[in-house]
Image (cartoon, rainbow, N blue to C red; front, side):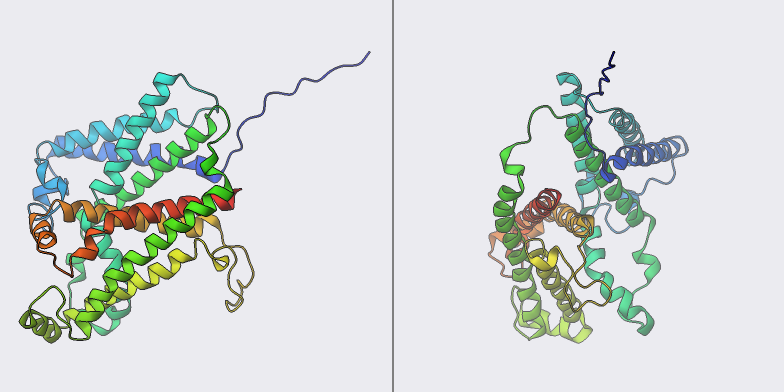
Length: 344
């Protein structure tokens, strides 16, 4: 007599991305408790009028009163923590209402955390970071680092990290609970085609921005008067602009790596890494971070009446910045195509 062993139904393969759900739950719960304490004590809220560098001057958070912010954040973050915990369960198709509810709420909270809250400050930090790090031993640029790395800036960076964790948790959960085959556009061959267009688009726009900053360094007053440019050259501001332009050019080259062979295997001239496969997350995470930072900065720019006035006037220095939303979306799409292509 033979015994037949019945194997359990296969489950979706687990990846490191599945760690995003418990990490997001812990992050959201911890910051939700801090927001609740801020509600009870009336201290520690870092946004809006409490932010000395961006309260009433810029950013969408200026519209949220300080008295409303802490309890609002506490409620939103604690509910999101529960949603993230719900995404840590075993794979299996949830009911349609639950799927729609979790997807809609998690996506909205992730968008607010990763895009609305960071604003222009995070992109500015990424752009100036090389100059701040390299120039610190030499006392240039002459800034007070205590005024740069503040509690409001740390809170914005933490919000960005939390939004990325929640987005990763949502993507992992939807993939594990999906029914039916994936759509054709996510196939590696298809992703390679549309990813190439996205990568080249994301590479061209920062180069256009860099041209305007290099023009200032060369003495060409694009988008400003000759007198203003003379003042910028006198106080060294043109060098800061050139640094941002160089950052944009380097980013453009790295973006093309998402569709190039050297973006999959390290070039031979790199000692110790030559010929080795490039880890997927090593390319996807930085690209996603920059895409979110650019999109966040775009929201601040489009919410500023002064910037919109420059666009209407056809200011040559501001026009490339009007393309930043396209840059952000194209870079995110290129990174996603790279991940789909490498995942197979």
